[in-house]
Image (tube, rainbow, N blue to C red; front, side, top):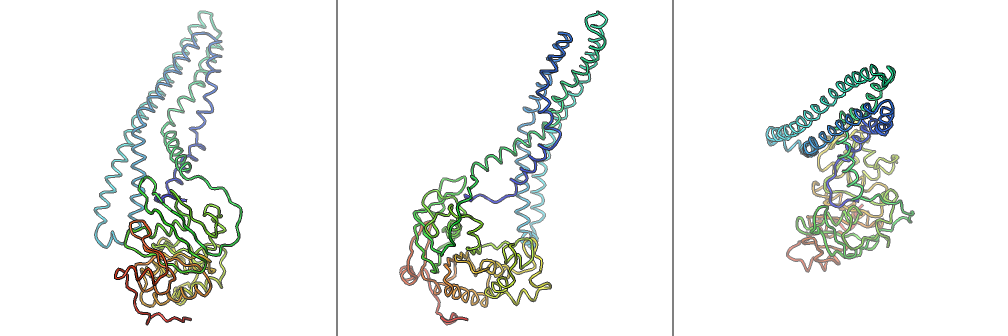
Length: 467
């Protein structure tokens, strides 16, 4: 579930970064570090001066490591923040490429992107310069100290305090003892990035607990009950919707109306169990939404969002929700949505490949394709968010026929609409204002109470009996 968060692919990028570090050479420095005390003890056994040199060298390299952490931590944190914002900025722009291109905003947005990249590169450059300087000092110190310990060993051998073999062994052991620390300094940037990625993933997993797989329940009948529901978006203290209490019986058709930003779409998503509740409960057939297995429940739910997003794949796969395609069910859903003939007119028909936002189709065609996806195999519970926002008169008539057909089949339908031409089709109306349920009840009673705020057109264009 979500709590009003913005969807992002950043957690996947964090997981990839963490995996790359765990499978890279930098991790071996941590595995080799426990051998450091043993190597120092052996060097001390050769001669106490060897042990002193090894201890001093260990503290020097640890100091350089701490210097790397303190010197690059803030810069790398800022660079990561700039990188995240730059990626999200690019994704948002790509979703609005037509608006940007048509209204000549490309140059200005490119300049903004360049400014973000300059700040990102500035932070990365400073961090890399500091880390590179410290790494160079570390390697220089290792080279010098190994030469000096050879000289020390030669002096001790001349004084007959150690053997010539111990002199060579001491130099080799020192190099072996300091190698993990040197490698740790060199891979510190990767370690910091992996650590930040781990912290973001840990924060995400704590905020969104992994649900347990519940016991399977019988197929729903379409009854929905909301009791004192309130939803507070992530990072906010003010609820989007509050005090919502509704009872929708199986087979009813309910319209949710109200001014913009009244919380209508939020209420729809809450009914789907997509938002974590601040208070109250949402129940389908008496069971709270968290008690339903999402995979098994999904085939009994049809959802048409306000902004229809088509996924990479063929038209038939999109309608079939990327399950095993049932040709009869796909064609039945497309015919019901009034899009069958349009699909046959495409170059490859139902096998036409859709990529990105499906620019091969118009906004109205994408919406009717989304409607066909929601109607696939005639689910028992159907939620439509502004289903006719991009439809012409023929599309409106087809949608009215869909609602009539769903009534015959006994499916529960909840639709959000700004238009009043579908209100005569519904049984009940919920009127929302400022995130609260201002009125809810039988259609005629609510419309009478709201007049002249809502006007229902005559039914001449919408026959009571439809094929």
